[in-house]
Length: 64
Image (cartoon, rainbow, N blue to C red; front, side, top):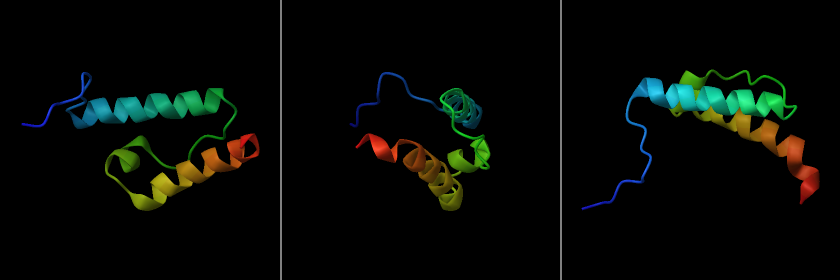
């Protein structure tokens, strides 16, 4: 039997709220508001996910 992590998000709404919080934190860190919607990320939309990752990469690529 596979063990679940301690904190496990089950509902779609919980997942969307979590991604929304991540977007808010990204804006607080100086990133532009993501064009993707939290729902797109939760629904595993590849283009939306890659856009968010690219924004993170371009912001922090100089820190390597």
